[in-house]
Structures are given as C-alpha cells and as structure tokens.
Image 1: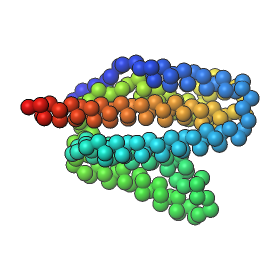
Image 2: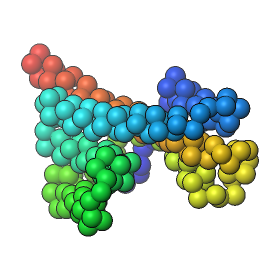
Image 3: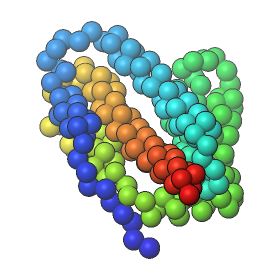
Image 4: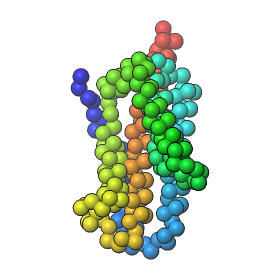
Length: 208
C-alpha cells in the first residue's frame, strides 16, 4: 500500500515559509521580553481553536463511519497539543500536586491510544493512508518544530539562527507558530476535502 503525496504548493505554503525564514530577524527588532508571554497566549488560543474547529466540523458536517472516527481522533490530538502547551495545566491552574498534572497527561495520551481499539478508527487510518497528503505544508510544519526544538535544546543548528541568547525563548515560540499554522493547514485541507467529497456524492445520489 503506497502512501500518496500531494505536492501542490499553495499561497499558504509560501506564507509559512516566509514566517520560518523571518524568525531570526526578530532579534533585531528590540522586542520587549514580556512579548514572549503574549505569543504563548496566542498559541494557546489557536490550539483551542484547532480542537474546536476539528471537533465541530466533524460533528456538524455529517461525516460518519471511519471518516468520523478518524477526525474525532484528530481533534483529540489537538487537545493533546493544547495540554502539552499548557504543561498539562500547570500554566492555567498552578499550585496543585504533580500527580494532578501527570493524571491529565495520562488521560489525554491514553485516550489517543485506547481509541485505536475502535475498529472504525483503524479503518479510517487505513483510508487516509491512501488519500493525497499535503506534503509541503507538513514539511514546513516539521521544519518549524525542529527549529524550535533546536533553539530549546541548544542543538548545533541553533548557532546559525540565534545571535543573541536573550532572545532564545522568543525564537523558540516564534518557530512554533508556523509549526502550528502549517499543521492546521494539513488537517483542515484533508478534512474539508473529505467533507466536500461527501457532499458531492450526496448530490450525485439525489440527482439519480
């Protein structure tokens, strides 16, 4: 079973690439340190939006069977990213025992794993394995993630993009922005392609 790649380069792909290439120049803008917290807040709201968008698009669009199962699972992935972004609740609800935050993390991760027991979800994964995958946006998302990780962990590549250590947190967060945006583009394109195909099929059935 061969994986299908969609090599279409979109205007959004160009935008995410420009964002990735522009991040190092933020070091020359004399941005105040507290701007990092605003970026983090924006990311939290965006991940919440991604979860709600994917979930309600799945519920309200009329998707069923393996396709509905797959996108419900995908919405849980966004919830997991939201939980990780919030350090499993430590940022929003600080002061609780570590066991509380570990429990939140365990519930989200186990939820993703246990859903794989659902036969329809496994059928959905096989189905989307055979569908065209927006490879460029995925690669741009991966680039944003890897560059953010390089800044955070001080990997060798960071010496070529981090010129002022005072901006390490800012660059890390800024690289996470195109990661999230490009990843959402991948998700939205695949989901809405499915919804449009479903509606087209229904119209053809009604026409006959």
